[in-house]
Length: 414
Ligand SMILES: Cc1cc2nc3c(=O)[nH]c(=O)nc-3n(C[C@H](O)[C@H](O)[C@H](O)COP(=O)(O)OP(=O)(O)OC[C@H]3O[C@@H](n4cnc5c(N)ncnc54)[C@H](O)[C@@H]3O)c2cc1C
Ligand code: SF4
Ligand code: SF4
Ligand code: SF4
Image (tube, rainbow, N blue to C red; front, side, top):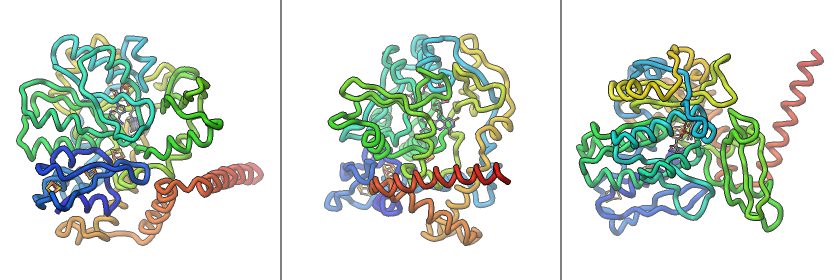
């Protein structure tokens, strides 16, 4: 009845919604396998089931999906209009990850008193506490929080404020699983959604905190520790951006983006293997990088999908601060390689069937033997990252690079 089930299935995304929602204060977070994971004090728990009900981790086939929904129908749901574009403020665009639309929109909505505050994520290095989105109406702070952090961030502060059921208006930025969890909490507690604006980020996966540990171990000299880490910065080579590490010695390094991408295999969350909502279908407006050929841009360009009438109204009233061109949804889907997420949809079926997660619906799921094997292999790599098997990761990493080079060489010869 409680989130021990999510933890046992390794589906936790460290959002901390359960911990804030628990009426008995029975849940605390501890650091485990590169994540902050909830732990239930069984002496305090009364088995009310609230934590499991609001947990987005366990909900791999989000409750509003029907058995007969097929993958492409789900992906195309809730799309009113799409755009490619960027914000006209050069300073914000430079600090942001893509076109700076998220940060600029928040700044304008707060300045114009359309909303009281926004929940954004400022993160520079890992410490022994969960990284929580924080509430702010300070324009400088909001601008400093620009940029994507590929970490399992907590929305504890969002839930704590929503619980108060005040009449204030809030903007919430989040990945699809964070927004799913917040919406589950809102519906369970009958909180009105009309005062909330959900700005959703596209999301392929997040990396656990052992990723930052391996970067520090690989690139830090003796006695050097990471002071600041930027997952993607446009500082030297523009968009799509490389990573940047600043050590406590003052030394800094730009790390080629291929390093972060190659290490994803070991440090993604297990839950991400079953996630197919890459484009954030539950938000009011969702935002991602623009990977459409000929529209990519060194200064950074975004794609947005307007998903609700509230989102449409807001974009229309602030259109003058952005440079936006209408876009076809299908182009965004192709450029985001959305078909790859179909694999995750199949893995979700394997998991649902193996663990009887949805006893009534899963009877009809057909699962393929090959998918089961592929899933096991992917989970093996993740276990190396979770248990921080430094040498094995390094050997495997170098071996894979060598094989790829050999493959290219053979192709060239042939
Ligand atoms: C984990 C993750 C995975 C992503 N994967 C993809 C992808 O596969 N394809 C794609 O096109 N785009 C992806 N994005 C979105 C993309 O990186 C940009 O965030 C998006 O295009 C918005 O760009 P922007 O310049 O408008 O945002 P910015 O102006 O840079 O603002 C970003 C906002 O997001 C907030 N934020 C940053 N990290 C987090 C976080 N972990 N949780 C909650 N809020 C956060 C910041 O506080 C800031 O308010 C991902 C983002 C994240 C965080
Ligand atoms: S996913 Fe969130 S709600 Fe679910 S167990 Fe993990 S921290 Fe708790
Ligand atoms: S079942 Fe209820 S009391 Fe127990 S941990 Fe979950 S929310 Fe708290
Ligand atoms: S891929 Fe899905 S589960 Fe993983 S962090 Fe992104 S939204 Fe959450």
